Image (cartoon, rainbow over all chains, first blue to last red; front, side, top):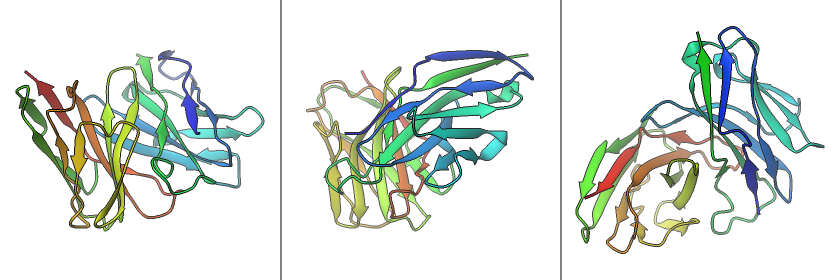
Length: 119
Length: 113
């Protein structure tokens, strides 16, 4: 089975400060990892993904994430937060070794972390 | 929300009624998905389809049905058997290949009166 945990329901950070949104995962094989952002009453927007290779992945809007296999983590980071970054962030995982049976080929999402950036 | 449309944006249903949520994509994606989003629970997979005329149950398929007669379309029917249908419903699509990201529609908010 594959699972994702986002341990923080909300993260508060001041504008201009660095931000981190945490994500840990569990898969039986090797993971494909994704970050999405959701603004109120909207669909999810893709930010970045880790498939293989360099552990530091760069994505949209200045976000990056670091894959750490030993800690089974994929934390989302940004060096300098903007008020407009305030939104709901989801981490998702897919086990690349899973068989194509029911549900296995789809993503498993974390419960989401609300990021609040104060001016 | 790029190439995927969902309609209607808001939907109100009386208890005992079936309702159908529309999802259309023009991205030429083979795979399409339906998720349900409830506060504090993230997204849960209802159904997914890897190819036309084929679909698979997800984690919470009970009370829902789908069809995939065309590549572009993946409608979701919420039946009267779904005990707690009030939620935000999201449709997504992707290219084949488990490493490909999913693209999401803007969502439909269903409320049971």
